[in-house]
Length: 318
Image (tube, rainbow, N blue to C red; front, side, top):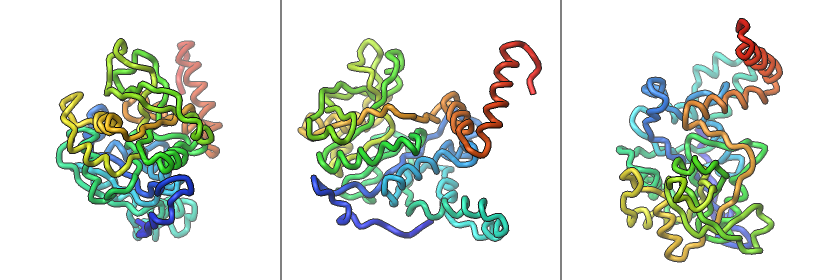
């Protein structure tokens, strides 16, 4: 792991406050949907072709200029940290394979990786609360450990810029089908101030509810697993009672700050979003990324087409 850090004072913007330079990745869950595979292997390390999900997420943070990453971990998840640590024995074995050696060493140089243990999983808000001693009172990003966006369609840089300008909460939304609202935090929105038009498709958030029934949802805008939060979120988490599922929800803590006057904005992401939180989404992600790879995409797409065609025609599979 690298041992470098970024000086927060060097990231202040000309139009507002300091830009967030730290990221928090909550990754303590049990991943019961993937059992028994996740009994010994953290879901965050399940491979998407040849890189684990977690690496894609850390790379997303570093692409936005964040090189200080805190992993909120749980029991049996120390291998997540190992993935970003040095392996001198492996590097020695790969000395004559420069491409593989570079891929292995890349994980060591991505970011300074820190960890904090969440002993009991009592909700996303509860998990984020464990980051307070690492983050302090500065703004920071939260990246959920089971979804990421396409590197060529970055989302986080615009979110960091918007938060630095407003000093408040910045979310990312994507549109869902009405019958899917009970899976996500859902927002009601209004047009954003004209001064933010240069950033992208920005809206002002007027309310949030966690996992509403379709008939009770205020919109079809769901919270994507990216947040940029002010340091005062930690006090709000302490004042938030258990909500949906008996857990301390980050959505409820953010809504508390909103009612107290903290500005809340969101960027609607219309690019590619990979969701590896459930088996179907994970398989879709693997197929999409494999099909787009320069080194194996063409051959894989041909095999996939042959496989699908054989299945639909009842012919033999190869």
